[in-house]
Length: 57
Image 1: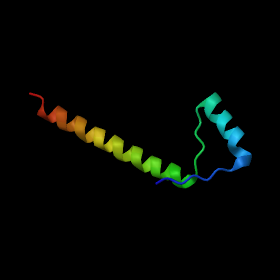
Image 2: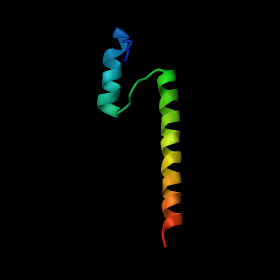
Image 3: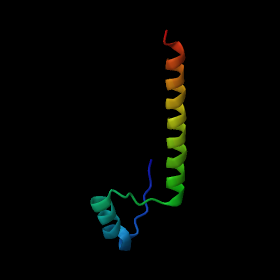
Image 4: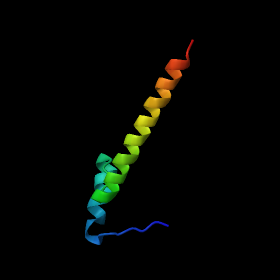
């Protein structure tokens, strides 16, 4: 289940930020979760890449 909190005064500005500049407005907590997820994904890719390099004959 997901919950959203809309600040109605900011909806138009948030939409324009995304539509014009590709900026997604999110809370600091959401951004922190995303940063951690991306770091884990990069580490996983690096480990997979290293493993593949080590197994190449």
